[in-house]
Image 1 (cartoon, rainbow, N blue to C red):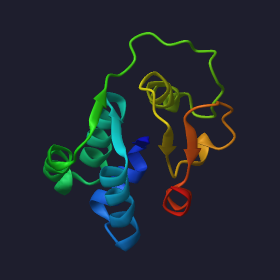
Image 2: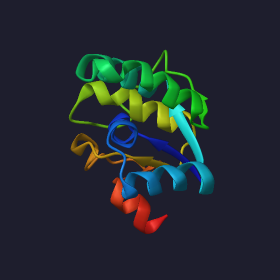
Image 3: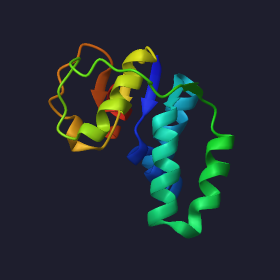
Image 4: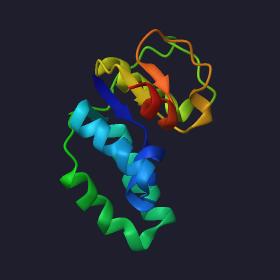
Length: 131
């Protein structure tokens, strides 16, 4: 399966590793095909740089060592494809759709209740339990 991890999942795995997050990253990279959007990478670098400046250099190393397929940030979007509480998250989920992703793993509650057929939106716990 093609799996996209949201920024919050990547930040948790990178900055707050534990057995659960390590298992999630291993599963996403070894048992599935990890896909990241340029939107997610940009957001990751921005958030880490602002909130964890001492770890900013590590974010680049983390991404360099992570095996993933890159899907570009969308330049044009159909803004009526789905409804989402946080409009800033629209491009991220849109890139998952355009990138032909099967699963979108996020801990962000703004994605709850988004009505789309694909990708399936799951929490990190659901990903570990079901897939």
